[in-house]
Amino acid sequence: MKQAFWSGVVVLLMAGVIRAELPPSVYEAKQKEAPEKIGIEVLRVDIESGEQADQQKVGVVALVTRVDRTASGLQPDQVINISYVITERPRGFVGPGEIPLLQEGEKTVAFLVREDSGPVYLPVAGIMSFREF
Image 1 (cartoon, helix red, strand yellow):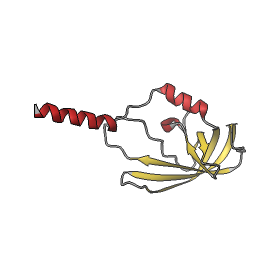
Image 2 (spheres, one colour):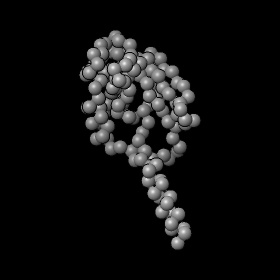
Image 3 (cartoon, rainbow, N blue to C red):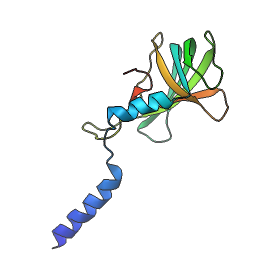
Image 4 (cartoon, rainbow, N blue to C red):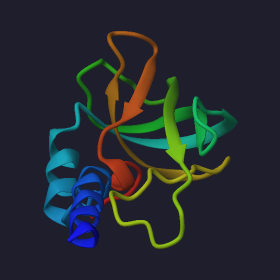
């Protein structure tokens, strides 16, 4: 009886922790709803320790190479800052995929939103923020 009780408690606690990977249609919708769809060339990547031991803050300086859609008035040849956090997950983790770590010199698409009218942009499509379907 006690074993069944504790098994139930563990299941309830884990239910709040475990998150499943999102289906591709969710990422596609996030990409379509992104206020900014642009091409970028990564000029610099800065990595710092995050607020938790398993996190890293990523700061990217990127050159806008093309503008497909913009709500903030981005223009080609403009330099922007992109910020996000990567969380190191244990092997076998079940949950949403992490935003990829960009590399200097990389040329890619970016689905972003401007942070509170400030100078920083944030990825909006999770693991698919820097990839197209």
